[in-house]
Image (tube, rainbow, N blue to C red; front, side):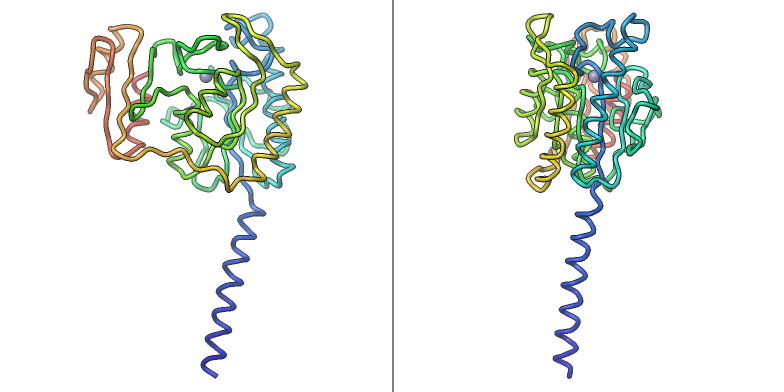
Length: 292
Ligand SMILES: [Zn+2]
């Protein structure tokens, strides 16, 4: 009798475990951070500035690329899709044209999650759309890192594009980046940093010019690759660093390095550079948000 009860309990535990795994599979939650410089069609700062004459057209393309990723995620079985508008004002994506299956985060909260506002450990995958290469990358479209003030951002010895910093934020919450879309130079940097990651190069920089896919073609590929990436979700690892975490920022001006050196815990490491070390990644992110 006792043995029977034991076997029953074991079977119950196994079933429970299996059911939980099944539930997690059905409950796919996807976080999409959307920047603008890496959207197909975009080539000039005017294209991504609210005062630019053609900004309205490019914010539509940005919304459509976000939609392509949303549709790809829904096709892969996502039950929750959160889109974070992460360019400039963070008020670029046209809310009425965004896929109704997604929720949208607009504007800046003032907190340190910045372009990843809304991410948490409940998400299963992160997708980066419209991204661009780090400041100083040759043959890259509108390369920069966060603001024009940063010459270089280095995290535990690695030069970081925004995609790297944001992947590390996702990694802090245990969530992997599964797809990165932007210009070819960015997709190369993403592969260098993350290893196995799906990428979509929607344009290829030629000096300050670029050869582009038609926006519709870019969207078609983003949708298809998003579904493919999410179907092999278990292959991707969260992008994580071992503590302690050290971030070194080199500025384009000495003046800003002087100001940032007064942030509590920051150290001046050179004429234009400041660094910050902590065993808590959130502390590094707080430093980063005040150091901009
Ligand atoms: Zn950006």
